[in-house]
Length: 247
Image 1: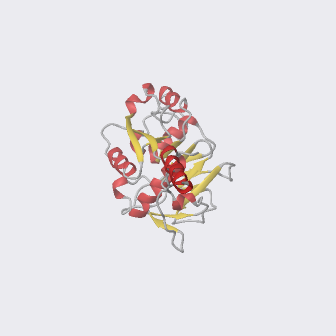
Image 2: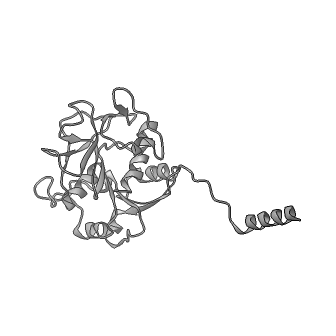
Image 3: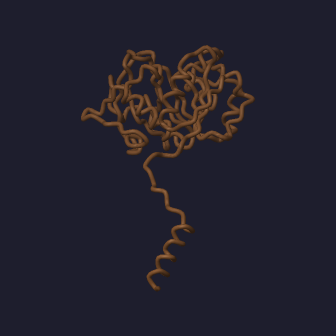
């Protein structure tokens, strides 16, 4: 009788107590807003890449930014082609861009992390005036490879694995692309260079091709199209998106 009672008790516990779900290693889905300029072609390729890696991506055409709400997103990406040298005034000043005050108010008012890409990202950074300069590198040849260093381990491991070779150089693109770089005259607290051009000095130099500004934004300087990323480049970009969403 005791055996029957014990079995009945165990049966009832199995009914009442739900089974625990096994914890997986896949990071939670990220909800991303991607700002682009009408008539450009890279937005859909970016969306396809990120959706294939657990992200929801909403494309926001630049002309709609001022009236858009970004409250629901984990990260706002500003595309390379979203802006050009359409303003007037001193280069690398807030006037030398065609980002409007209303655009930046809508984006900054959401208080979300940003990922600034290439020229469009640089010109947006000029509008908000962060702690470092973003500059077009007109003196260097186009690049397809960067030298990495100082990268948090999570950027290599989650959600995709990026293998770093012995020379610390990663081939990101199948063809060379122009680049915009982060610049400081001396190290700035909270600013980290993750990768730099592999054609010059070590990672500790004053220019960075990929980097972050703590609490503000990540910066991806190469201007190559998403469709020309290597498998390694795709993995690093996906990981960087996940990383920047937590800035």
